[in-house]
Length: 349
Image (tube, rainbow, N blue to C red; front, side, top):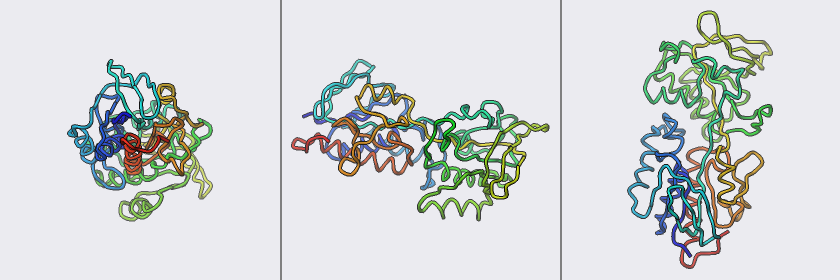
């Protein structure tokens, strides 16, 4: 029985799993394909996190430091697992840096890929510089200035389009990405804080600020920050004669067409399966579900499991997920894996 857990991916879920494994007295080996730890919140330059309101660099930075300072965790950056042999309790992983890792259990915290809105060309991304994504707008917020990419002017009007790459059967995205509504309402408030004179509009099919987020984000963004919510179906984004953007579609509440000028149009991009998932499935011998995320094991008795005994998963590897829930799932997967590598631990599930 090996006393080490191999963890693949160093986003919030993977960092949480690693800390939980060592907290249980076991050793962890963390493998990250990028040269920086922290996953999407760090690599994509997220601003303030939902729901804590902490800056991503601070909150996730604490998690990174905890892992880097823990002597029981070995970290491999800029590295991938190329092969995994063995079975639960006795795995051998080959890394592309030439090293091998012996592990009793594996945790896949391999995350997601942001939807690329060039796959919705009618909405202007890639054609007009002032059509951007939520991650790009978050980078503006993190830098402390809201400005049109085309010429640097302060925008008078910003539109945020929800469900870009989510709930869209025409492009094969049949799932809700869970976090976009709440992130967008939070982003609207952040824009207003930095640029009070800017009007912010959110165009939606439905609003899904679930649970306690309804009051804190949906209502607060309207009542305190004057965000305008418009139930609509957007047809296209084009250029106007004065250098601004024209948003065209239908207001579905009043059943009439709309053509409205904006300075910036923001795509609230959804969460796609990790683009590496086919390779991850091959290397680790696990199944994918029909949309391309990792297939869960039977949930009620093996909530962190995959189709292969001894290999667990967490966070957005399973499907669209919030950062907070990813952290909790990472802790759960770390506990489950640590139990497998205890000297007298139960048989891997």
